[in-house]
Image (cartoon, rainbow, N blue to C red; front, top):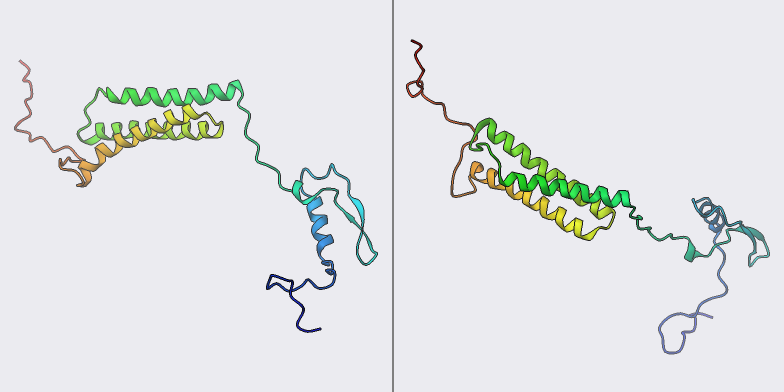
Length: 185
């Protein structure tokens, strides 16, 4: 009978006769049975609608997806995370009392290298604290990372023209007339 009758109260068509099994279902089930972690469950015989007997894995579709496992925080991992965080924090605090000039030339390169080490250490500590789910360590590590980036930007912006004060990358040559050479007597 055409068109098929509609279910009362809906515009959906009435389902037709029993569904024909998918010919690739056995292949998919066999491939799913080969996934790691599912071999411990032996397959079992299933009777299909046509009377054929096939092997199917003995699991439901709800057990195929495995939940993500949170890493267990051991004492060694916890100490490692906090060691990285405290290293970054110590380097950041020491940068506040940088004893050398950082106006231009090689001293500036040394200072920028040290601030880059602070940024890398903060990033290293932040990834470790994220992996082990240590929240306070993660906040401190991100603070160290932000502080290191602030130190880098504070030196880069005046030299690239994005700040009110302008600074130079290279030191100016000192005229030879200003250099006093001690005379040996």
